[in-house]
Image: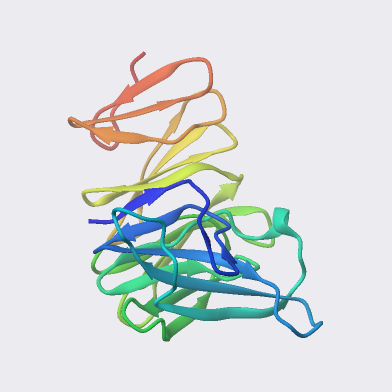
Length: 231
């Protein structure tokens, strides 16, 4: 299983920009690298084998995702790598593309345009993103893991994504800046429910048949899609 940690990793000239993924004794992370030439930075993804008794000292591979990137750290993705089905998934430097790489070699398998990525989730069939498009609409989209082909794209109204996109069973959960917890069918993209929580929705947590989340003032527990919220 994949474990994501929020710590920064420094390896040779590579310094991670976002949470790194740990799986199968390897870590995977996006990084910003200053090349020897004077044409901007490179946005790369690197992999390194872990030694339980020491810090990683060398990379297994590093792949340039975008070259000639301005050194604007605040504008670069804060969305970390995700690993599943022998693939590593990352956003592009401008967060307008989803990129899939081969886990063993680092080869780019596909990249596809999407809304400005704020959060991701993956299963063995699809990679999911939540973000905003150029019109300010909150969008949840799914892409085939094998090819990057778009499976659905659901527009959900003017709002920003707040917190993480969470996949549990056959349902995607995502919070919005207008106070709604949105429930989306992972297979169809259909809207299964909208729960008004009266404030900016924080990361949902799904456990023991309930969805727990907060609006910053209250904690809510929800049951199956469409159930009413309880405090």
